[in-house]
Length: 81
Image 1 (tube, rainbow, N blue to C red):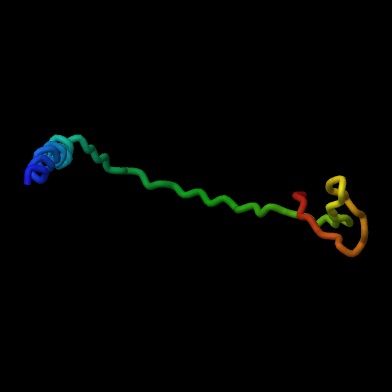
Image 2 (image 1 turned 90 degrees about the horizontal axis):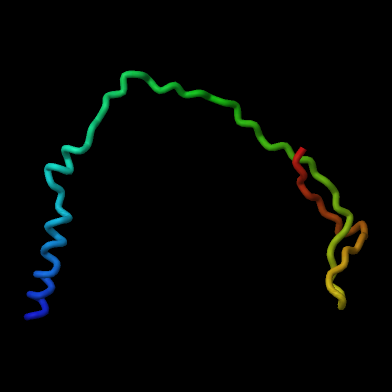
């Protein structure tokens, strides 16, 4: 019972201070907007890519990785133009 009473006594100042007051509502100033906002439409420029063929692949060997040039496992990479 004492714990409940002590908890409410400790929480009471926090609960009162968190409640809104009239002074906080008076600080808000609303200015009417007389002018319309102008929306500027700009064309969206898509990024252009060119596909580049990489005729090699990496293989793991005993001494590390090695770039092996062969035709079959070639792959394409997108490169900006």
